[in-house]
Image 1 (cartoon, rainbow, N blue to C red):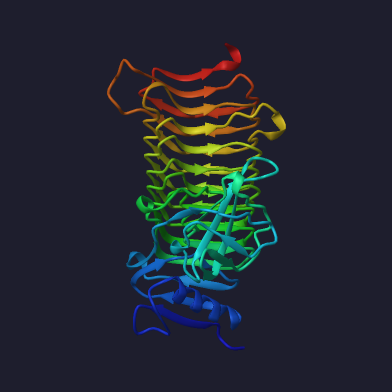
Image 2: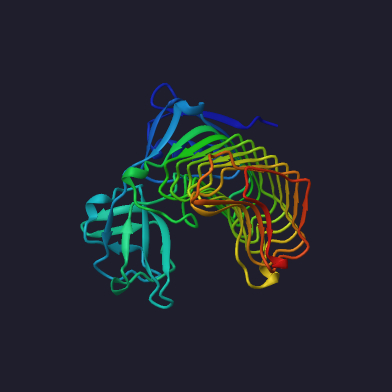
Length: 400
């Protein structure tokens, strides 16, 4: 049996020569056509005018921080005619921001539901104000519903592909020159309906959205990664993702550090450092059950170190989660500074051997509370936890 193929891509002296998304995509597609293998990205700065689309059984390996995939500045323009769900042409006010082979995002309010909707495609032709796209949008974008087109996309995308590794590279989201893209559609790395994905030693920073987001993906492993200074969520295991494993990562300066989205189950989150989140270090909520969160350090969260989100219906609460041997330090900035806030009606949660501390000088404007247990929480086990620097270690609203 022949060995899997390996190719190089880089600015010079490589099998595929170039320093943009086109060269990277050519190498990935070539390896995929031969049944899978490895794409080695040589040191260099790669300008991303579109996503690098992952293919099955392809390993993407860079040269550490010397391999940088940087998103180009974004632009946006209004549609000047309706685009229906079956169309492959979008008519825009300013076509100059689009180029063949680059990414295009359609966004606007649904004409039928009123909520925002988003579709990502690739430009295949620019003909005056007519932008041809690779696939019909399957949604309606109408000019009386604030329809726009923008050059927004994840830097690396995986859609319905399995058995992939991404290793040893850096993703620069160029936040200062890009509009916001919601983490349900984008991020430095964005995965949709993918299984058995490994991401190791990848830095994703300064995205105007999430660092790494994976939606309805099973058996995703994130190890030794860094998610830094992203506008929204540092790491975002999305709806329905089963058995995520996140170990030994640094998650710093994000809106929320680690966000259990919706129905995330049987995950392991351990040995991570989560610092300087603008709101919550860790947030857990809707049907996020049976997870283990162990041995993490959560420091200087703007609101809470750990939040159990509000859910009025017990069926939808985050049950049977274990939080063990974590350090939660210096949570909140004003008023009631609560390290662990348990809202909603979670059941059978175990909080064991955590160290909950506040090291900041005394302040008349701060009321430090280590753990607040909401009135509808049931059967929580708080065992062998250590508190230091608190005005009140535990506030149990069930008995007040």
